[in-house]
Amino acid sequence: MTDNKQVLEFIEKSKALTKPDNVVWIDGSEEQIKQLTEQAVAAGEIYYLNKKLLPGCLLHRTAENDVARVEHRTFICTKRQIDAGPTNNWMAPQEAYDKLSKHFDGSMKGRTMYIIPFSMGVVGSPFSKIGIEITDSIYVVLNMIIMTRVGSNVLDALGSSNDFVRGLHAKAQLSEENRYICHFPEDNTIWSVNSGYGGNVLLGKKCFALRIASFQGKKEGWLAEHMLILGIERPQDKEIKYVAAAFPSACGKTNLAMMIPPEGYYNKGYRVWCVGDDIAWIRKGEGGRLYAVNPEAGFFGVAPGTNAKSNPNALATTKKDTIFTNVVHNLDDNTVWWEGLDKNPPKNALDWKGNKWDYTSNVKGAHPNSRFTAKASNCPCISSEFENPQGVPLSAIVFGGRRAKTAPLVYEARDWEHGIFIGSIMASETTAAASGKVGVVRRDPMAMLPFCGYHMGDYFQHWLDIGKTAENKPKIFNVNWFRLDDDGNFIWPGFGDNLRVIDWIIDRCEGKTDAVQSPIGNLPKTEDINIDGLDDVSSDTIKELLSVDIEMWKKEAEGIEEFYQKFGNKLPENLINQLSILKQNLNK
Ligand code: GTP
Ligand code: SPV
Ligand code: MN
Image 1 (tube, rainbow, N blue to C red):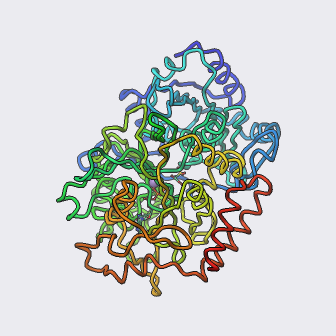
Image 2 (image 1 turned 90 degrees about the vertical axis):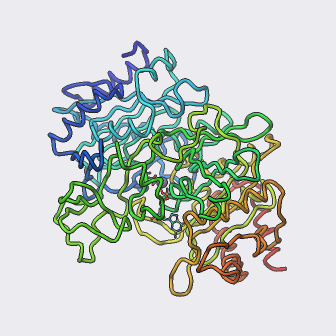
Image 3 (image 1 turned 90 degrees about the horizontal axis):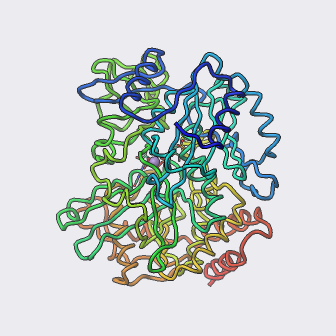
């Protein structure tokens, strides 16, 4: 497929280590997909679903101990520990290579090695990056073909260049205690062993497009962010406005990226276009603006909660050519189901573990982190700019998380520096997307805590620096769809109705409306959040959603101070100043 010496050398070394019986180059052709799928089905790794109801769709179950990203087994392996920073696990590169080599050694004996050349971003664009993933999993191959741009044209675009990320993955024994996801940003290398789950093994995604790419972006002057990108078409604007938003895993990126406007908005001519649902690469471009591209080609979305009301676009996207992982298998019609899809759980079904499932029991049928892998091109609201190699100009950057009480529905940063502060103090309740306890509040700056490939203090500085030279920067906001009432119910309806908040955000960017100053930033006037057509939301509800509890925020400021101490002298002065401003405001 190629005579690129560095590529061939990488493959030879990987072969010598893993000792596969066969080697297959992946070109992503229909013919090859068909053949590999047949093979995986014959091996019992994958199941065909109903060809009429779900054409081209497949079902896969991971091992029971392998259902989410494993942050405690994820490492940044830089020569100096300080370069990985206080928020990453660190291992010295040689130690990591030696340790993982033991698990890779002979791991593909009796197996086939697949070589996947892929591009993050449009093939051949100067803003795209190329990777080669070597894996022994057909499931990984089929997912990568959906999630990235795979094919021999990638190798043509690479030519004889050495600028590609080397990803090596082996399932090995899927052993939990020997599972390692190691990143070597100084070597453009990722090694992943003993897992078969999503973010641990689809190396183009979090491993490359965030951890390695953030490191590259720091060196090259751009940002790799855990952000969705959406376009908002409004009748009053001449052009579509683009917004990028960073929410932690399972906090609503895919849903916001594909939302359907509330009826009243739709009838006025509002439309929402999805450019990306998880990752944004952001650079300075024409007119001093920041431009964002989605480097991925598909969606790896959370299944539970996805339904015809919450996210009809996602549901439509998954009706063909989709891989479902760890959902319920309906044996009556050979389709799939998950909690929150509809009120008709299948009576004759297998749960995500492949055991007979009793829908009347209290046991969930689908894993809370069960997923669909679907092509972006199958999404009804995919943006016409999805393939634009220059990306889209951002009007706003939005940060947000799951906060039961503290954070208001929306507030606006006073300026760029304050915006970076707001991003840096993000906190959110943990979800099932990573192994570990669910529902614990943790600081997750810019939703990048598990994904920043270098020292987070340097990362904050990089954000500040980006702002210094871009004259027409986006405005920065914070949102929280997840405020709870005293009975533990969500106060805000969320989903499509989030457009009401985005609408205010764009109005602010366009200078079309005033805001109210508060100690934490600028808040909307109650009447500026449009509640027409919302039965359960009154202006009192909006008041409650926008309220800022000073005592709670004083505690929050203490928490921030403690968190900031981690970064030592790498914490930018500007952020320390911002924290004192917050404290002063709260004590006024
Ligand atoms: P990752 O793919 O893991 O990064 O997650 P994500 O950020 O894309 O989250 P996703 O959109 O898949 O939503 C995760 C969960 O949050 C689902 O169960 C959704 O139903 C729920 N959710 C999303 N948006 C909202 C919202 O506006 N309000 C409420 N209450 N729940 C929401
Ligand atoms: C996330 O956890 O943010 C995901 C799923 O998008 S994974 O690919 O596993 O990282
Ligand atoms: Mn998502």
